[in-house]
Length: 520
Image (cartoon, rainbow, N blue to C red):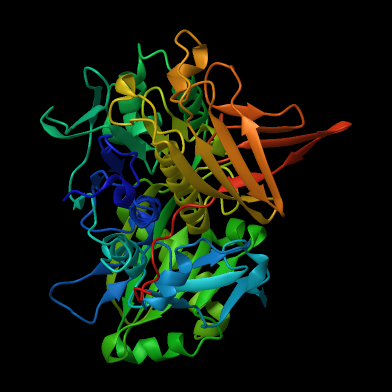
């Protein structure tokens, strides 16, 4: 489908860049929703090795047992800091997520229960998928496709499940080519976005026995200092593994579980060391059954040994509620099914990839996910916030700088005037860039898409500031000697005021939200 430059978020006459997003977890799905709701006009393809969206926030289901579904990774997500990510409100309004209202607690090494907010994963505002945690990923994709939000959606959105991208190759002239383990090309795109670390982290060699890390190998020879720095930061990250035991409990035995004083139980540090558990959730199923999911911090390499060890840990930790000598037992009564799920990199360890390093313009690579430093690091909150921030940065690159992201070498002047909203120190600021009509060949800043004679009009806190373009090379900057507006990062411009000392204001681009869901 095609749209006008205004509808698609592209400067008039410019090709809409295409994106390949590796991973359809929460971050990848949220990025797609944020971009399309902001008017991104190019195609977006999400490449996912799993059978559906969600990643570690997926739900395991059975074709043969419709009443059986288990949130085997994240049973909920929390938002510890405000304001909430912008996609949370439409997810709630669409019935995709709902507040978590079940009892939760924190267990100490003596077996005593305390408030759940002592666990960073259980503090703040708690939400869950309404019909399972996979509703979070499905809801984000539905927002990306909603015609009421994206009228005459200019670009296509598709998900390629069950596909592991193994090889990455830079196309002649720029952009990326994606191939599977056999070398067969699966797709191409102008920009590559990694919503997880697998293709950039050395663990790819350990997990799959690959001789090289795909993105590290592809980046050789590009000479992109930004990408090299980002890859070095990712390679230095440690990942915390999880081994999850999933138990299906038959109805008679399930009754004892369903009356426990918690549905979600976290364990503090000493309790984790005593029992080898991180968290446990009790999930009611159809016909009176329940599922019990225990997140272990044990490291048994053999699956059978891991199942035995985790089940023993559960009986020990929950002995006060299970009773009947459960603490001395190695197996639980009434278990219909035992399954194991291993997460090789369930939680990244800090400090994470700096948010300023998430966009590498020269190589057309970007990153989002819970491994990005900032609020919510290592959790779903971080995945949502980093995706929202990346969507804003990519949209700002197209809308404000007028870069032809599909082919930067052919970039010319942007539209005559462009108005972009920002939030600066809490107040709305409107920046209207006017490229002007003066063409002065040889002035270095002509390569950035504007020419001398250009201005920016800033409307903020009752002020109207018209600042002339400087002759500085590189990204646009404007100053009248008192005020300074500079766009090294178009999503977070530098806004300064000289009044004796230099006063700096914190600014963030406000991504376009599209019309309300009711069409008004």
